Image (tube, rainbow, N blue to C red; front, side):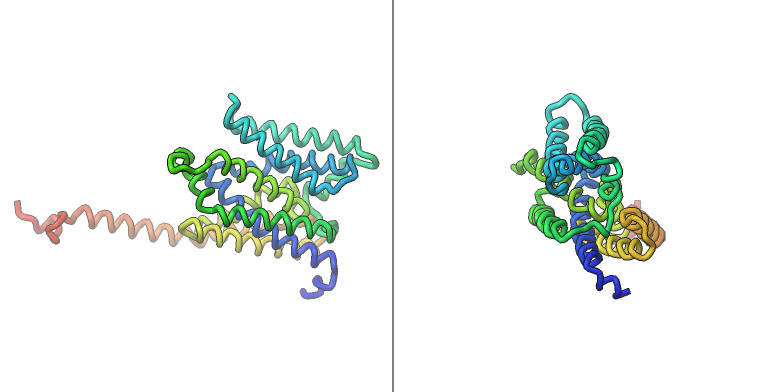
Length: 298
């Protein structure tokens, strides 16, 4: 098991996996709260255009993906605010336009082909370079700073925008900041998980944590813990079996979700029965008398 640490590329891949396991659920919990669980998919398709632009211009595809996906996320928010189109239509435009733009630009790039995008679509542990690790560390620090430092404000906006606006929070600014953070998270994860599967890592660990925890802070901590476990396990598994790490990570995450759901279901049913019994007991009590309804004389 420890032999994989003797390979430099695996050391880089495991470090990237840990950072992805932290950042993806940390952003995903807000997207789930806003019922925008598939937002990562839309941003991932736009990021594909950024990757292709990097090949075309000869620059680092990670940074061009950050720039283009950030622009796409901001445009989506602007459409949601000012446009007549609904949010789901904006997501659809991101899906189709991003994918088409990526395929078009990659074929215009020197020595470019659709195969050049494969490692970004599904992830590849062997292609994580030292430069990629430095970039991912920098971007992950930004994501963690925003998602944890502004967790109260972001939670309030995701829970109820109108109430947050009444309390004086800059709702639009926070929405834009969350969209930008989601875009950065997608680019952080694309080397390990892949653009097509990153949304699953942003959502599934959160959904799994919600089955067994109560309260925002506990759910966030549990989701991040699950994210780190599945990204590390999936990366190690992909090394030994020689499969794309993104697929391994997502399958493991879904397996963890199924396991936690199966274990939490009996507890939830027992808790529901206790709550129903307590409600029934309260219904039989007469307020202020200390006696049950059967003891009251008419």
